[in-house]
Amino acid sequence: MSQAPLQARSLTLADGRRIALLDNGRRGKPLLIALHGWLDNAASFLPLAPHLDGFHLICVDLPGHGHSDHKVTPYVFVDWLDDLHQIAQAAGWPPFILLGHSLGALIACAYAGVFPEQVSRLILLEGLGPLSQPDESVPDQLRRAILNRSRTRERASAGFASLDEAVAARCKVADISLDAARLICEQQLVVRERRWHWRSDPRLRDLSPLRMSEGQAQALIRAILCPVLFIRGEQGFASLQVQWQQRSGAFRQIEMAVVAGNHHFHMDNSAQTAVCIENFCQIR
Image 1 (cartoon, helix red, strand yellow):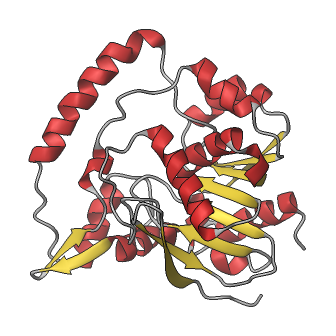
Image 2 (image 1 turned 120 degrees about the horizontal axis):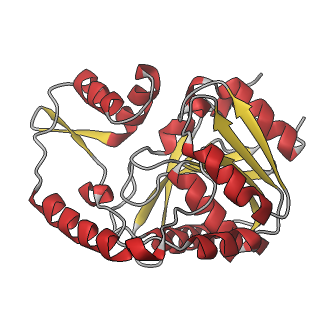
């Protein structure tokens, strides 16, 4: 297996924001765009990249994450779709295979429903469409989101004494291995005054003020035209099994695979994950 290294590059959106990318440079191969999870970054796909040499792989640092610029406005779910559309337009990408993990899978699924002509195949890792909420929970969700924003504005981070300390902190807030956390942290940290600080926008930790209804989420799913592959980890989010029962029938064409590992199985079990992706995309 040859290994094409991922090269760091960037593009500038029409509004002047800089978006960082990792690109394996294999132009002429099927274009595969990868979106990472919440508080992760493009480096979360580094373990998977050597197994995907049959693709032109481009991994995006979503706004506010990694080396991409922060947003001026709050981070609202539907705006991620606008961000991805702006990125695709600025890059001039033809129709592409879209791969998303966790938050990236939620974005990818919704995007494929809004712009079905742009997505030839959809691969969802540990995510099966936008989060939804019952109508009666809206007042409480809005209240908690507004109060949470106030706390975010008041919160200040002292940083970390070392990279190892930051990695340990990352492991405490997610079911992730030390090696996987280190890859993410190396892309997500900057040293200022001998302390290690997150590059990511603190406002990413704000609660979402409003989620879709389940009917709205499934309407987006029904608008997806391409084949879909859903991969979950054996020890991943248990709620996804319930969501599969609830939503799988809304997809026109979907298949599911289960691989060994937790929520970040694509980092710790990258070879098996890549086999699932290659088989689905018919890459040999």
